[in-house]
Length: 403
Image (cartoon, rainbow, N blue to C red; front, side):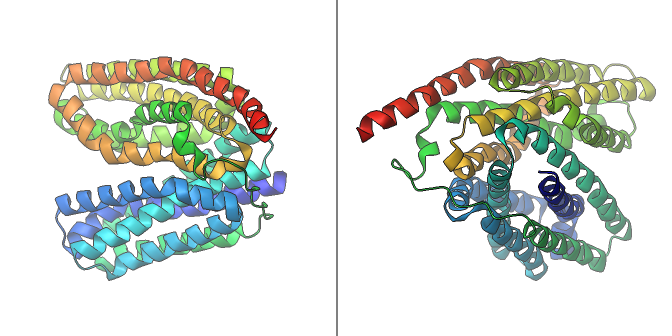
């Protein structure tokens, strides 16, 4: 498993480096170079992730039936092609088309990579391996963000085009790295509905709960920066310090936290504790607006992000174990594709929801958001038990049908 893990990690690191450069520069490229409005960019990206969310399950099913390595390679190449196509965009309609292609390829690639991981790694080690990949991803994002920062400093069309070229080359490189992995045979065709995950109500509930928890992503990337700029006395550079703390925390501690999760009981407990810690983080963020001292506000914000990182680590470790364990071995692709729609939905709906909630309601909004995290965390253990009971009766039902 050692060589496979190193190869998976290398592919994740290369792809996320391109992602990091793209994420910090894309908005300014589309508005400043292409000439679209911020509203057009927001609508286009929202539509792109919406289409990607719909495509995740069928592309994951394709990975199950055709083999996850080949599908992952093709989708990495498709992502590279989509990124390169942004160079040709000059108006809103083609931008939407490319954004949809990008969102589809990215969501499908995530599902195929999870299916590939499940095919190469024994169940007992999947969460730990997934944690190692997450650490590599955050490291790559940090490196890519630094490259993107250089382009922002130059602020020229050529610099932004160079970022797109780097991003496309990174996904091309990731595809080549994935080819070094052994092929995982396609799952055998079994009786029952083709997209069984769409009828698995317990798994849908678990996915919904995880989606609520994933609202920490737009909270950290959008709401906290807006809160710092508009409601606190902290200097604006605090945003960079907080994001650096978050990235470093995931890189350094994700694997350690994941090692403590050994089965569904540990995973459920981990998500429940994540909800409690996220509630505490929201309370601390709310306190950061009190007073006029920049240093005090900065210290409170750092404490809030430290709590958020702990919650993120606990959530990720528990959610990975739950998503893999509750999925049938022959349907990991479609199940991971469905579970991954939570990320797309949080990115798509979270900004508008949290902006209204926190920036509109202030301290009360922070507390409401924290209670949402707490409620989702508390709801996960019974939802997992329900899903586990459904898995326990499935073999009996199938046997009865066959006889």
